[in-house]
Length: 382
Image (cartoon, rainbow, N blue to C red):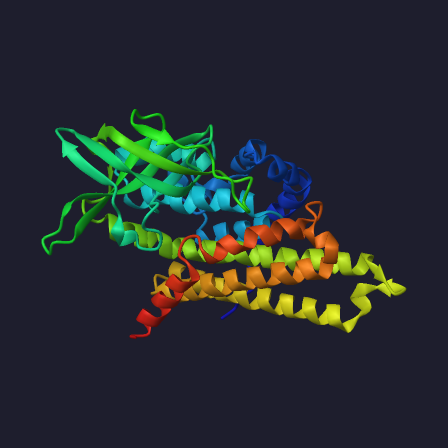
């Protein structure tokens, strides 16, 4: 029950915090305004080894664990969420499926560049007409000789259209199960494959410095060897990936929530009203105290889920709780931080305006709040 970090974990957190404050903070607002991808920040994160944090050294990783990734995500999101989600998606949705389920050939081909941050990968799960109903996948892949022929579309796919995107792993219907249900499999589609089209980036409310696209597959052919994992196990594979990813998203949400506290304390000490700093007024003090309480409890929730996962214990319910609670806290804290800043909270020159826009997607992406409640209820036997 000891939630204190080890010296190594503290060193990681401190180094990422310094990077976020000294490298990310001074430049990220411009990327948000121009809706541009921060390639220079991504390159530096690669040099720091952040993309390889939870992977074994023999695969080119840093030899850490998933909790190390979560610590990094929290510190990045404390300053900016676009950078944090770029790392989160690159690791948990991009590289992790290949690391977990890939053949030796697939790992040798893709992991070195993905774990170094030289390349990114996307995870094509969500479709325009399915959303939370992942079992309703319509994209199809038919085996034609020694090739898969893929037809369909995917929506809201992160890291799928950058200049350094190497591949997208897609879920597709590859047949019919013995019980009559859909047989779902996952297939690697390299960038630039004929028939694979990346639409222009979305015009988004938040995360405007991250990369998000709709993808279409029109008789897109890839080798049969690009099947990732066992045929027909795609649904089980992506569910396990999403369970882990929810802990990472919870960590990201905690970072945003804590960033709101940081900015609110700073502003409350500087802003004068009626002859004194507004932080002297109990109304502001109580708001900030509640924000800190929420960020703290959300952090404990993701720490607990991560500890269970790393111990090899069941963690599905705890991951859902962490993601649900942390995303709610992020939205709450962003709203309160904006209120504390008053009119300036609505101005893009202040980070809390960015936090406010970025927070809402946390209640939607990688499983909506409603889906998290379904998972929790089912795990309780209801």
